[in-house]
Length: 446
Image 1 (cartoon, rainbow, N blue to C red):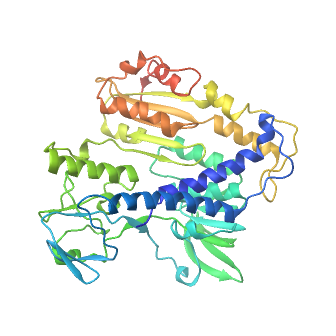
Image 2: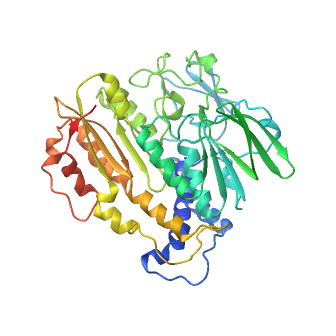
Image 3: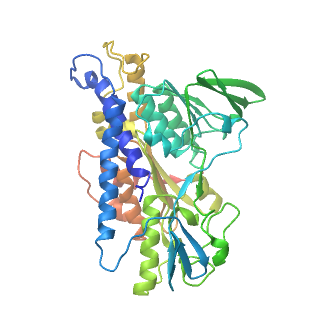
């Protein structure tokens, strides 16, 4: 059994945040003797301790569960109701597939001739890459990029699309790019990788952007361009289970495959690529089979977070998706610089006289101050239907956004009008206390 990628990645992010905050201790009036260092072996050891404990806890609960037998091995279908594991065949009337996914490796010239990391193999390193090149400017790539920059690496992010996290609204994409650049990350968007090659002990990445060819040279490379389902060696043909052109198992609204008695959950069904969507898949299947509740995937609300610092949390539709519906809609926005809690936590965006250096290679206090300004200049945006007054979606970029978003998600699941939260009293001083105020400040979405 392997732990989900969330736990080890977020553990690294936490270590990176601790290093970053320690370097900024002077901004809070805290004195630390000497420069702040990062012991990558200790960082990895901490990550391993946490993830192994989590994995062992899950494994222990399964192995001690009454009526449950755990077999370790590669399972393959040999018929529509029969699976073989380690040469032993098992038959069942109900079979549930939840095999996850892995990094997708693009057909880039020379990529097979150079060493590179994926999000999985990146978990195994215990050293600091002097210059990490990240192929892919979406969720996985950006989390690693910021973490390793904070550990002390030089970092370059290369993205094919015109902007980072292109599925998000432009305001969110540009804001995320801004604070990453403020931390010293070299962001290259609208850049197509046309080849990679070894140059001594380094890796050279050749780019094409706006008709011009350029080159980025680094010491290590992370490929974080996309994901693919682990379905290509399951013997699905033997069972007659249908997949789409990308290998995702096709399922209906209750996660049933085209073969009676076989369900597919988690990353492999293309209905979500998160731990919470996989768990919700299980809840839907279990409710339908055991409780006859008739739960459906289409009933759930899209929700996820990008765990950079500050985080970007999302629920429901984006602003662009709302526009495409053609229905009258409302929008309310608030800048995080107007939120006292964010201002208190991040500190005022003013210059200070300290000459501390908070990255290996040197980043001045002026850049630290610009980062504080960028971090406190996140925003909250809520979209609502004009007529029903129901929330359609939200984007929260800023302090605790990944937690605050659940206030909005719960309101959406309750199918309650935004006037319910408009009258709520939230605790001061928090970021959440401004949600009721935002509910009083909707304007027509243009």
